[in-house]
Image 1: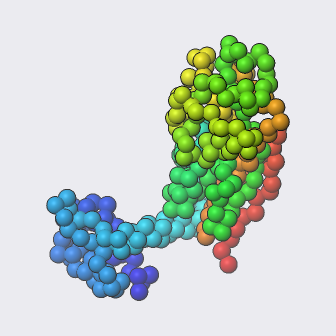
Image 2: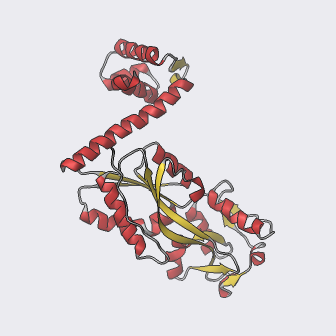
Image 3: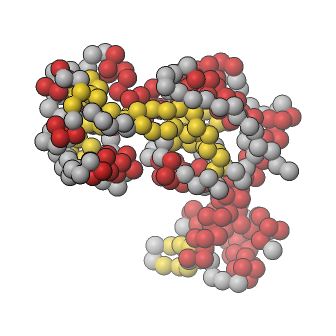
Length: 316
């Protein structure tokens, strides 16, 4: 059985990563014939061909790709188990790998990471920025421990524990000198002919934006600029000629500095729920549980916000 031969799985992954049996053998410090024999035995166990040769080197077959994906999860879980045992014994420093979107990273995480690191000086923290779909994929693949996301439609609650931590608004934003800034509120009709800079069409936040106009019987505005870069969106808006649609958290700093002005839209409420998520299949490491508690405490001081106690999940 595969579960009885983790060493061969590890060797198989090294060949996949190196793209060469020779290079993999060098990094594993074993002979090339020995590695080839190990791979042959692995293929006999699973009953399918896992690797194929081409001019570019060794690459996994479709069966090999499937096995490699699951093998990576297995070894990540082994490392997670080792880290948890070390933490429970008091011999390990611990780690927290966090994934979040730009608004959370920009406006929330600095106020969470600083007190957390002061209280847990031996814990290592890694932060990864990304879109919701990418972060959830990274969470599923054990590349991160915690994802802070806002897309309730895409949350797989059978795979992830999803705890709501904050209610945030999405708002139309203009530069302080823009003609709409003096009005402070407008209708959807008023927004149709503006010069928009918006996220790419396939991003959930853009789809939600378009849905609001369609629900009102209006065609969604055609953006002048499409970009996945929040920095680009804010820079173009600050230049004075463009408007955009952002989470209020992401516009807070520029609003306080007098650079950007949020515009209320009549009879439209654009709210989003922010969740902190972790895998159901894994017990929550003590360092991660502590970070989530610190995160919820930070969110509870914001308005509007809603924090809930964290229940650690342990293995039975």
